[in-house]
Length: 262
Image (cartoon, rainbow, N blue to C red; front, side):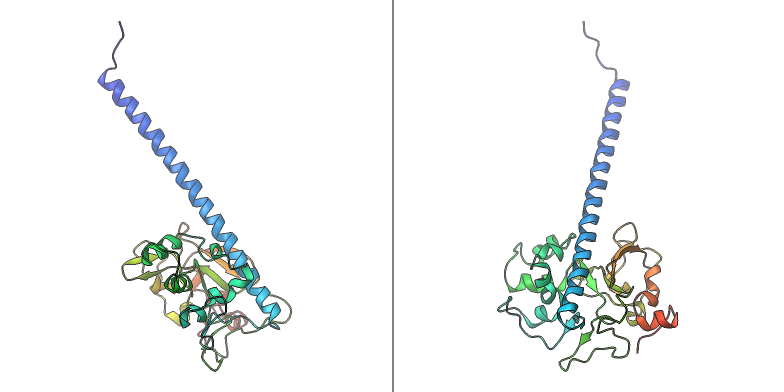
């Protein structure tokens, strides 16, 4: 005669199974998050190398993050002007036009959803140019330049490779933005606190509007992945990123964390 489980034994068994299941899901989630972070770090380093290679091929001139002199690109026939003016597709030849470098996070799915599930067409290219995983410090490195080639901050924007080596200034960082009601883990530019007038909390929460903190996204336990001009990678909080010495050569030279670019 087989002995049946008592109600208590059954409840204990169900509880143990639930706990093991939760631990398993938590472990898988942690592994996936680590893999995602590793992929973004690799993509960020690739972007930095591409950026420096471009400067080497152009007599030390840094690529503007936004260049209103550009209206078309040979590899993007029929692309909208803004698609070509933002940094992604102008830098793309330096990473073999591999869009995985620009779509290393969760932005690819959001871009595809906005584009009605498609990954083709001029609108898709436009969205990729808008929402790469990493935003660029376009105002203070390379520049946002007008149709005459003038940067927005002519005195403080670093437009050429400095003598004596690469500088420890922010070049790229994980970014985010919103498109209507859709939150996208990506944006083409990050804006320094003194320029954007940040309203930054100590830590990012899901309720924070990316535009309030210069479109930076501290998506890894309250830290953003930051790629410096010298190719190094750091994880920094939004509070740490309020230091203008990380963004601007003049601020670093003057040792002024609150420096206001002119």
